Amino acid sequence: MPHQQFQACIDACHACAVACDHCAASCLQEQDVKMMARCIALDMDCAQICRMAAAYMSRGSEFAAAICKACADVCQACGDECGKHQAQHCQECAQACRRCADECRRMATA
Image 1 (cartoon, rainbow, N blue to C red):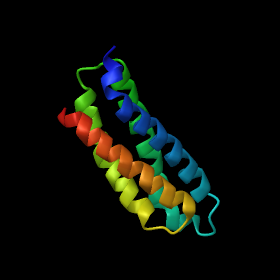
Image 2: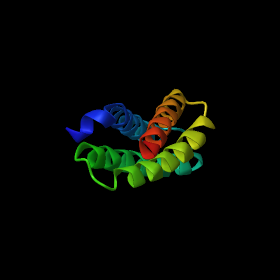
Image 3: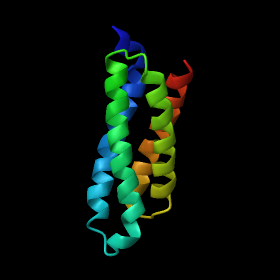
Image 4: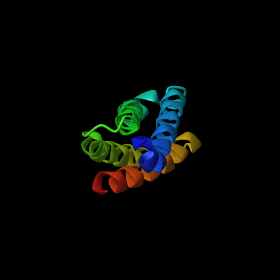
């Protein structure tokens, strides 16, 4: 099964998508939501591309490596933005994004 060789990356993508969804929802509850606008937007972009990357890998798509490369870039940007905020949900999201970016880079070069 093609997805088994990418299981660590698929798992990281799923975990990152969940963390990003949680972060975006939590950011909407912050006092200064406007200050969190870029964080929320990147959370949504990141969650969506992580789900897409996992789907491409799961079905063994010939485009999985290209999607994972793009996913790594989005995860890096999201992790960098979330890392700027002190909120626990942002810090946890930043960690999930960095892990996913690392896994996606590995997968894209495999």
